[in-house]
Picture 1 (tube, rainbow, N blue to C red):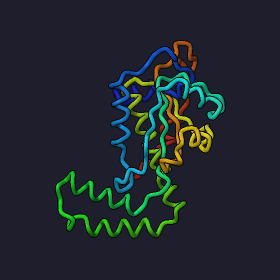
Picture 2 (cartoon, one colour):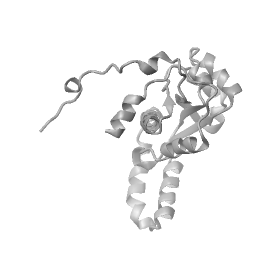
Picture 3 (cartoon, rainbow, N blue to C red):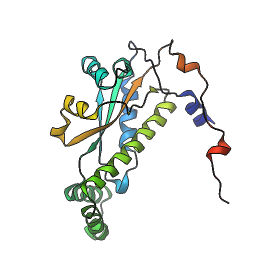
Picture 4 (cartoon, helix red, strand yellow):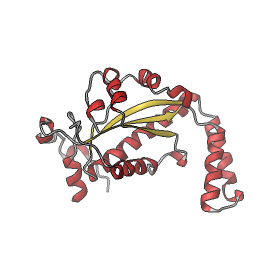
Length: 210
């Protein structure tokens, strides 16, 4: 029930207290949670940008349809995808696996070949869409960890990715922004914090097949 209570506690924070900061330990927890997010084949076609520069955060307001959470939050997390998953990326993954697990090439050779062929047979758009789906898995993972750690958060799709990419010069890094996640401490006068959650009954949401 502790997990459910934490999920009941969380909500999409509409107003952060700009004077309160998350600790380095809390931010490190979120960084590690992001890195531990499951991804397809373990390829991790994602990057997380952690912003705690108020001057820079203020520039996000206009790019986020004037939602002040991006500036008032303690930190602004930007979940990005790599613009493509290449054969080099796949080879790097298997080389890392061999190093970490101390295994021989013969253990991974067949899977390496299959995965390279699989990704080569996908279009660039299909590979990019796959990475976007995984960005949402990372978002869900981060939001759950935020709830457990009593960190307030507000997931945002409502922003102009092209402008954010330009602001952060992501093209040079071969990245594209997908999601924003302001994190911090809710303001005492955020009226949304005391409102009951609006959710359909479980029997309308869950289908059990015995």
